[in-house]
Image (cartoon, rainbow, N blue to C red; front, side, top):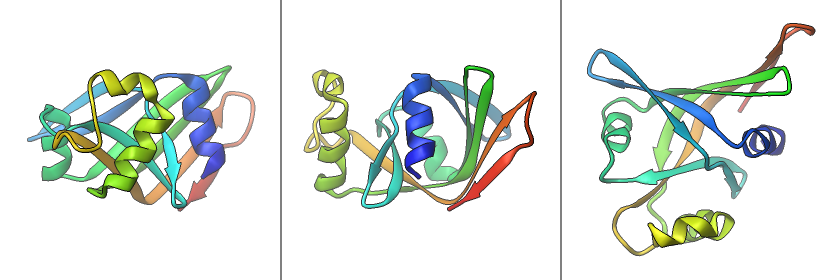
Amino acid sequence: MERICKFLKDAGVYYLATLDGDCPRVRPFGTAHVFEGKLYIQTGKKKPVSHQIAENPKVELCAFMNGTWLRLCGELEEDDRVEAKKSMLDAYPELRSMYDENDGNTQVLYFKNGTATFSSFTSAPETIKF
């Protein structure tokens, strides 16, 4: 889990894919955080991505760095606890200008039934299930 999170943080930006009805939607994200042994991401409940995940929690993300890419697919589960939100916002203090753990908008979600695959053109893929 730590290796996956470190790759996402070091890459800086990853792209998260959801479904909007039958149309795929991809957008850049930048949050990745391990809390209580689970990999979390963060968004706002008012954003379309939040509604898309509520309709269909199956997502995939992709990040690329130094010739290696990570594809991570799984389901996102919301964690509405203040402690989880605070942990994320403490890890990303720059988000505090837009979010607060008590604002009713901050949403943190963790991956379940995840499969992460590290790939490159020069080595065999490595898959991690969690």
